[in-house]
Length: 208
Image 1 (cartoon, rainbow, N blue to C red):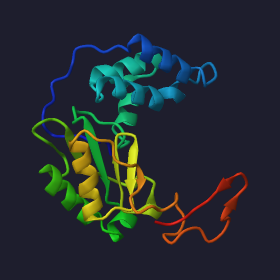
Image 2: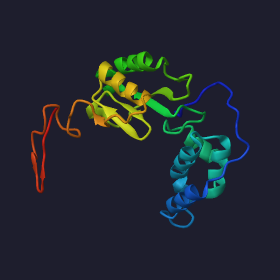
Image 3: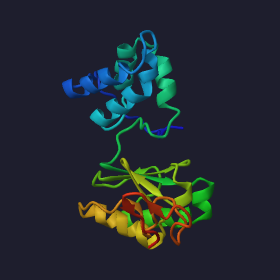
Image 4: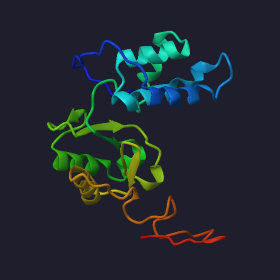
């Protein structure tokens, strides 16, 4: 389910796409045939969240009006997926996967690193408003578990120390290296590729 809280969150009275986001929304809607505009619902919710920083009810209502959908149908989508947040969050949304593959590979240690580096537990935001930590179910990098997602970036093949290093770099305003933190090439075996070692026109190197 989507990231929510039982704490009351004041809702803005209105929302509208800015010209830049309105253009992006129109491009998303144009991908679908006439009468099928509702298919762009997830894309428009993502745009609204990027503009607002979270999804207010006013933003969801605006998406519904834009697509000619009953608002309840938009609420159903927004409350189902963890990518949508229904309350204000920190600048960096740290999503820790604790699904089975990540748990087996040590996601408990990643949560501990978040607690030690940021001083907050899942569902909490740091006092400076920079970080919000949440647990999520399967972020899609099971081969390189455990992992965290921060914004649009994933940090994979983590352990306690490397997770803490990533978070501390973000605290300093730096941009940590995304992807595997052990040097793994994409989702190859940890020791490097065992097949298709040569790609025409490119040198493929594996492992850390």
